[in-house]
Length: 481
Image 1 (cartoon, rainbow, N blue to C red):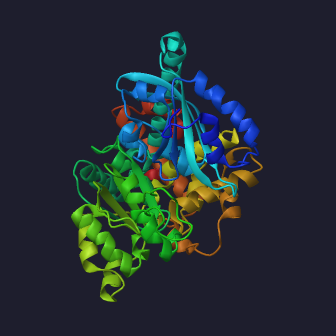
Image 2: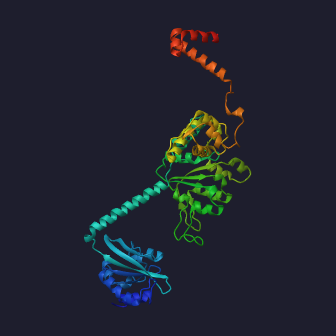
Image 3: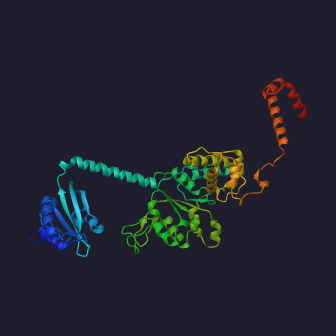
């Protein structure tokens, strides 16, 4: 070998030193390297900056090159674009078996990092084990199928992780307030506009946000939610816009994407947006207006396409008045406003909500759960500051403490309902409680009237319909007159 292409063992001894990180001695290196070089279809080495420091004649011939001096010192990717040598140098992890394509050739390659006496990475070496894959066709085909299956599985998992759990049917209710919410949600789903959901905690704002996304044109794209109130102020910018490699001590060596990048093409749900600090509000407004974000510690602008749905339990108009929320951001977010009424304002939905929640809860408990009309009436006596989230908690506790199997009555509800928040008895029912005798008399009179109408005034037929004798019917008619 010439000076540019020194003997393999002697060259690797210079690279590794007397002992490398793995404890290999010079004698072992000198013994093993010639065997690898002779058995391979080519060998190459790079330094810490992934520049070529050595290449043997076999690899030159394989690459269609003649003069080794023309490649020594050049970045390896300028010579072999598909190589993963820089990755090995960067991570220090070997790639023991890899298929690399080079000018329509498929090469089976192994790559190893090497170290200095102090254990620092100083470069990497690679050997082409096969340059003719014909004998390996079955293995390569299987490898490709597995690789494709793995890529498809990762893609499916990523979609699932960023997909929605709820549809519009999961926002339960048939009261006028609930129906108006659903009407506006369908309107929002059909148009590319920012939506602002207003409602107390536990009213179902995230359910509604996911429902809007699931029937929009972005349904197949990511849905990314972020709770502004749950993230410390000093981390919010990184959470929204990402972090550039090495932006600060301890930062990842790769770009860490923010919620805007993750939601690109889909929907970004900003929960509790009223808790956002003023400094970040300005940056959020710019990102929404320009469709661009700049990762923390970077000078690179990234274009993003997101549809924003914001939600808050706070009074943003009052916050604008006291200067804690930007009016321009408010108008940007509030293109379509959807107020979600609290549970105490749609008590007509209580029965339907209980039925839906109990069905879901009982599946997890492996039992059948029901609630009586009296149980629902008992729930209506409470103010529900925690709304539907609190209702679910109360039902779960009632089922846990129930001694009647899965049947929940008024007594079971009163055992678990907080005393604070209960309304006065005069507000519990819309009609006053009357003596039982009066209620029964009115019900009896109504039944008699209905029987006479059905029998066209024939009292014999009416008595038969009521299941009483004709004389008893005459007695009841006499009392009613």
